[in-house]
Length: 112
Image 1 (tube, rainbow, N blue to C red):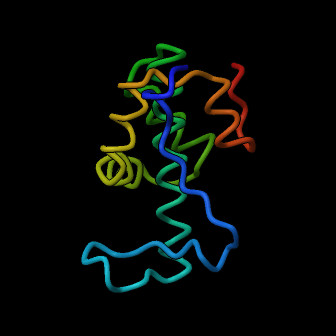
Image 2: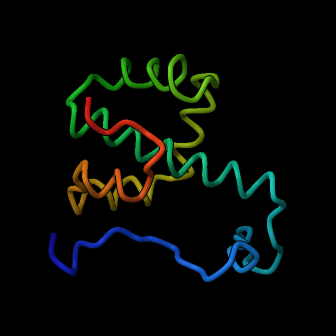
């Protein structure tokens, strides 16, 4: 993959430096909100994987994510995808590969 198509990865030297900010950029998010934001980012990556790489139908992918991977309601999936729309668009634009997704999120199976 070329340098201009690299995926956005936030790297910090320690966990304490990895504080995400709310929409107004001045209020730090709570640890729970950080985890939800990170979960939503992984969820968007999984959605991309199933729809773009594995070529599954969108409604089937939502059901799969709800029932088999994240154990949340479909509405939660929809909200997460809305929140992570920019990230999902970046994944689509740079055509992220299974290898890149595996490197970013090693806890998931990217080989199906």
